[in-house]
Length: 330
Image 1 (cartoon, rainbow, N blue to C red):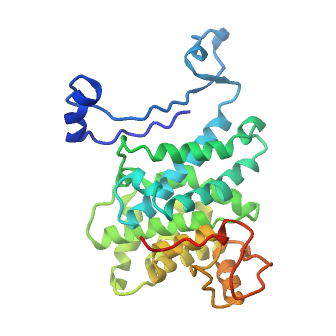
Image 2: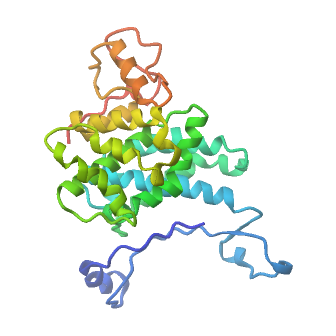
Image 3: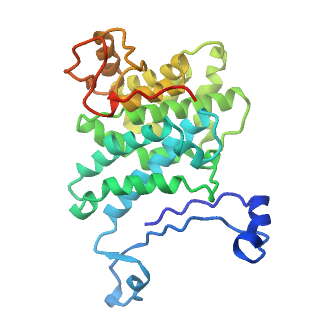
């Protein structure tokens, strides 16, 4: 399968620079990326087909594993990125994926939660599992393509359908295997903030189920002066979107925690907590080990403690990338 989103709108700058860049005029150029990935299931009547492999296509006995890898690591990540990017005040995909907090958040979501779901799938062939890390890097580099100028608002369209078809199953699998879903909880919390802001500002929600996902936030307008979770609770109740997750208390609590953190501590601090797997304090500023453990445990849907047992002093340390301090300054 190939990621082929609706191309972004042609800009006047695209039109004006065509002669200098490419040597000819085009009044309606469509800017795209050089990447292509054409995977075809080799199942044709009487085995008769063009020799597509001669032009770079990959012919495989079963296309499903390739589709699953692409949809989960690219499409789901795309959706997670658009909402946090919009909350950060950004406009384009390439701006979001190069943001100092958003990119490491996406990488952690991709490697710790999405890729983990693929590795746990017994139908995934070893040759694909062996290149998951490379595929993560490839997806992020594709998102950095400045020429495409894809907008976060476009990616945010039809979020309810995208979550239902692409994201929900991954979360259910992770919960069934008692894996962390913190990144997904932050994705949905950011989506909830995105919807709440749109409703409060009177903006149009571009979603096939706009009335359904906007209704909780219309009800929440009375709470515009404070954080609260009235709208969020009603949002998470939507079974047409969340399915059985609407009745999963651990999942709901995880989303609620991230939602309130964005309200109280801000988006960057909340992203920082998700990146490092701890509370939103940083730079050796955890007030106590017990508080850190409580915060970490509360955010993971299945009570997964994410503060290392090796912590012995007031100066927080961990065995992975969490030991690196990331400044919140611009």
